[in-house]
Image (cartoon, rainbow, N blue to C red; front, side, top):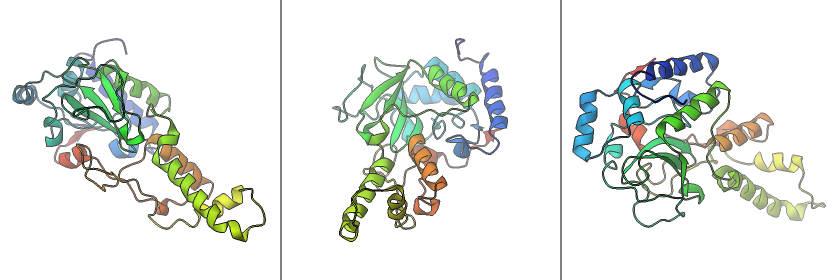
Length: 288
């Protein structure tokens, strides 16, 4: 998408989102069951001016145009585009995002917030951030600290970030967090469970090799709701102990294990929406 994202081009983008819906009627692509290819109602120019005046922030042009002419959240990357006009988002518009290059897992200062908007919940505690104030203004960054990946710039603009999702979805592809999968919760949890099972069963076995049948037997001992992803802290995204959703790779791994009969969906505690979604509630009608 080389053209600008403005009032003239956004009708075509809205039409494309609606077209994508017809190609995924069962909502099988990751995140589609949450956003259902629907965009929330747009924000008026008056409301946007009020938000910018109150926070002292001038939103990037492409993002502002999307909010005004497409929608304040809804269909989008990962678990969907989050709304801006909710308390937890407005609280972090002011301030400044100080980083210009990838930051370590525990950077100094409030790296999660000041001067950013949370664009999307990637799952597994990861989020996409749009910088609205600071030297990296307009860029999209990934907050991967839930998996030890720190803060990483991923896209030059909101337009590029959203366009990548449109293109990938049109090809039946799914966007993934820019982080090795082995850092995610599910593969680590499965590996730890298998190791404990093997250690416990070792005295009963006459062989040392761990077979596929052993894996199915071990995973079959997992109880209902025992596989749960939860927030370890209270932050701008979640409250401590909130159930959180899986990222695309963990969800794909879970689906494969269920398909082969090693796991059942009843073993998973469903994840819940992040704070921005909870605050938005169902008050705004989405466009279809």
